Length: 259
Image (cartoon, rainbow, N blue to C red; front, side, top):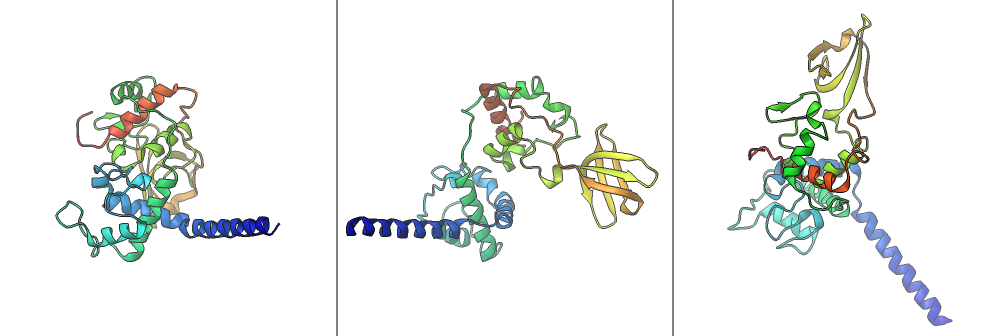
C-alpha cells in the first residue's frame, strides 16, 4: 500500500512540475503576435516563414543546428554565429523582442501540422487560375484583381499551415489589413470594401469594383468592420490532392522568380 501511495505521490509531483513548465512556456497572444512580426521582419528573409529554409535548421519544428535550448537560441540571435550568414541582432533587437521571437518559435513548433501531403505548384497554379477562381479577388504580379490581398509574395510571409487554414477556414483568422469595412456617409451612401489605410481623420478603401475611396471620418454616420471574410471555403470545392497543389503554389509565391 505504501508503494502505491509513494508512486501516486511521485506521479502527482511529476504532473505538477510538467503543468508548471507548460504554463511557463505558454506565451500570451500579444507576445506571440509581436514575435511573429519580428520574425517575419528580421528572420524570415533567410529562414523562410516556416523556419526551414536554412539547411540543418527547422525553427518551425524546434530543430536547431547549434542550439540545444531556446535560451541558446536567444544567445545566437543576440551574438550571431561568426563566419556564417547569421548576424548579431544585439543592436537591432531588445531582450524583450528576442524573447517575443522565442515565444513565436514555440508557437510555431506547437502548431506545426498540416493535413495536406506535398503538392505540385505547377498544378496548383492551374487550379489557382481556373477551378479556384482566385484571380477574381486576388492578384499575382500583374494578373488578377486588386480587391483582395496581393499574393505575389505570400509565400515569403505566411507559413504553409496558415495558407492551408485560410483556404479551409477563411474566417478563423482575418488579418487587420485584409478586413472589409462598411461605411455609411451622412448622405446615406453605403460603401463596402477592403481597408487600405486609415488615420485619425480619414479612411481609405477599395470596393468590389476596384474603385478607391478616401473619406473624412467626420463625414460618416457609420464605420464598422465586417466580421466574416468574403473568401469562400475550399473544403468541399477541392479534393485533398488539389488542395495540396494549391497550397504548394501559394508557398512558391515569394516575389522573386517568375510564376
